[in-house]
Length: 452
Length: 171
Image (cartoon, rainbow over all chains, first blue to last red; front, side, top):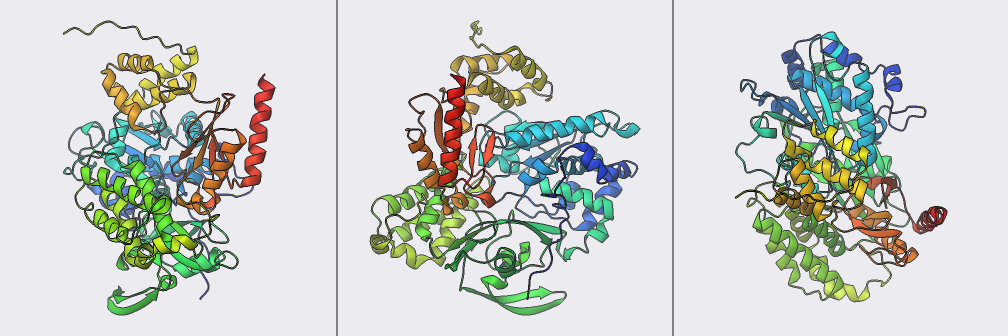
């Protein structure tokens, strides 16, 4: 079956010739009409539409956005903050970059609607430090919107006021974790907070109720309010509504970003039809489906079980190519949809060397406050790097696995899981390659591509 | 114990000082301005000196350790000067799969330097950084504030020649 047609909702204007990131262009294309309509409605009605839409967060966890908003403590008397999580940094993910660079007003409109819906008077956009250009573009866009009375005091004469400021990070991946991000915004080291409280919606920035939403999620809010939650929910599949942007990188003919109704495209359609298949003379070996912490899938393996279709339970028997790219199906086969970052590796890649690259990332990014993560990520890196650059032993495979198995569930935040899943899954699925690496290494071409 | 009076010497441009005073107003709690101030000072002075740490602490009514612990946590802040141009090559998986390590090595050769060090003429520092979130156009390189995409061997040569030409024009 060929891949369905792309449905560009969020990326409608990305790479469109003649489309620029200034407010005049946005207004010519119907921009800010939804905000103008929204501020005449009741905030609780807008929240209800988002709930009805079934929108799931696009930052990685897929947490229902309407439910997140319903957790906000609205009776505390304290100000409610909204933080746009623009700290896009999960390796393999590169969608928010294009929204912010090419269509920043879509984000600002979605943010302002979400602020109005939640009675937020102050929002911050926390953007990664490595996107200085993006930060400048957003600052200019906010100034343009302020000049048109769409941001700032007494918006459109309604009496509602809300300010947005851009806040730059400084190169730490952990700031994508929402409580780490909040600590960072408070001017501290980005050490994630101990739970409970489980949600910043209760106690977040400055111990006030706080909503943290991903860039793409907030853009979806604009479209939900525009067409109504029920109408939006018709896009995609039940439980996975709206569109989903996939960022494909690595060994395919046409890497890039592709937007589809959620749950309508399979891995095989995405990689073969949409991305043009493997590079000439190569075959696919492995794919990481949702950012580098997602568990790796090995081409050739099969996934079997029962799943719910409508009200019936049906058997499924899938190869990697058959898996629908939605949150639930990917979770069912033991991985995750995460942030939509699909990293493809072909048969030229040695999996020990690929894992050593990933382990170096997580070791560099561990914030260091929990011992299992700080030490575990370090040792996984040391062992896998030694295997590549020094002596490799057969027993290193079991050693790596045993280190990885001792991290998850023993840390304050989900980074413990994120750093151990690659090692756990690589070791389960490519055990032979790890155990045989010492021997195989002797025959690997000396001029092969360096991965670590 | 009374806090000893110190007057850290920082020599910032008037526009930097103006931006610092403005950015502090963005937050209900002054401490939140720590990262913005560090960015502004590093952009102006090139790095974060010990005096800069003390100056920020005084400005935001914090203890110097509150600022220093932030400087040492975030990879983008540096405590020593670097070359005039900063070449940051993405090291992470998607870029590595398409030759990121080779790109980094080629830049080091072009400027006769090693990873993390500054070239003998003081012009360039080459570093590896983690994922720059542009994996679809790998390998990518951030030079100062500009992202360069699909940086293969030919593009390394072209960019390096341009950097050298700009350096020569300055002299």
